[in-house]
Length: 338
Ligand SMILES: *Cc1c(COP(=O)(O)O)cnc(C)c1O
Image: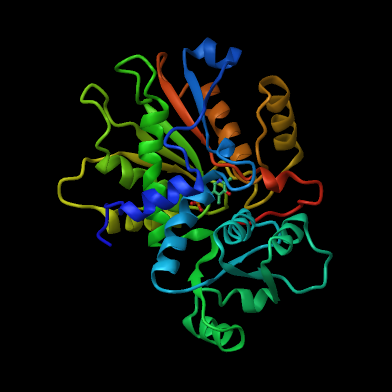
């Protein structure tokens, strides 16, 4: 399928899957924001569906379409014991009639996480592999070995990070434009969109989608996109993201400026220090909006820090993506994964 085109079949599956064209937008009012003259809104991808929501839904759907189109009824993917992606895949397989297999990092005999219990309840076959074997998740040879013992499957990489995942994330540009349609003319697009990045697939897709966005009125200029890397030493992601964007680029695409922040990870992937926990509970108490500990907590705290540091001129309008992940808030969730 050509880069940039959304085939009708995706639209059909997406309307089946209940991905709405527009989603709720929450205004976040805070004295700090008012003091700095900055407007903050939150796009509620977490509210699309009680179970199958967030950015993982967008990355999964085109993968499932591709799997079905090439005749696979089994889909295999990889993740940690608290993986949002594994959780979403198990649910999607259950709803859309795929056999699903989750290759799970760690075989040290620990009790199952709530995520894995849920996945098993949705019929997902769980294969626990050692951390050493898990490192081979990108090797074709490992996939071949798995296929010999499990039968043929369509493989989705960890986190849904593949061209189908990028293509699904491109739909976010339309979702944003439709969700903001009722704002006053000239304010339909924010100045900046911020989101949390693990693999950067969602960010790359959003950027590629905006480059092609047909629904923007001429009065609206394209927003700048800022990613917040949730892992340590995330500089390599800049290269990955640029590469993914280039793979989707066509000659008549607009330019979208983007930047990645690599110092807002709070110690590394799935690290959740006490000060961040306190920030999250204060935020939730004040605004009544839940954040997940791995991604949206770090996004939100980065936004507070940036506004506090005076990095935004008065009048700036920010839109944050709530990418979901709330299944990861269950009591036993100590460590999470893409
Ligand atoms: C997986 C995930 C992300 C990161 O998505 P990438 O496309 O890997 O960058 C962000 N937020 C939540 C809640 C996620 O589950």
